[in-house]
Length: 140
Image (cartoon, rainbow, N blue to C red; front, side):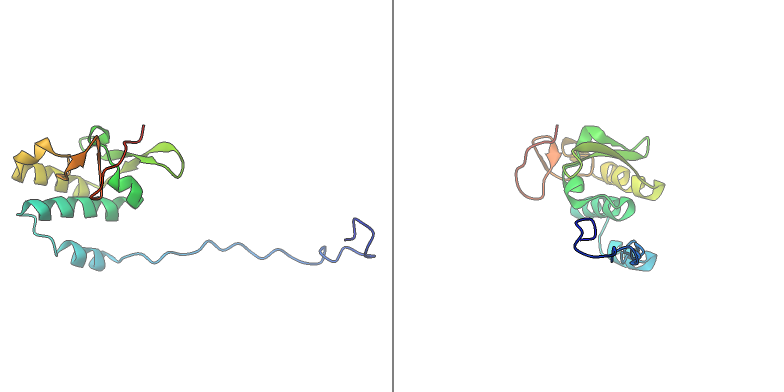
């Protein structure tokens, strides 16, 4: 308004911008995570698979969409990371995993060797990526 000559002074000049405060997210405590993970029986195929998948989700903070679309050839358990494709950014991201999380898929494969025909985490696949109970197209 001042620039256009409608006011005698710039009324915005006296105002200070509010300080940006990054929002805090509520996270699960270690005890909460242990309680959730204790519900899975690692001696059953589904229990071992679900424990591995949920551990990756909790350990890495990977987005749910990325977790569902994990491709077997991009899982590097020996190197301690997984590559995930993010539609949000349209690029591949490398997500490191803790040693505790890496052990779970390996244990699942050891206990259930028939799961080798499935994904590295023992989840059924359609096409070349994990799905959440529906068919989908593989990210390129």
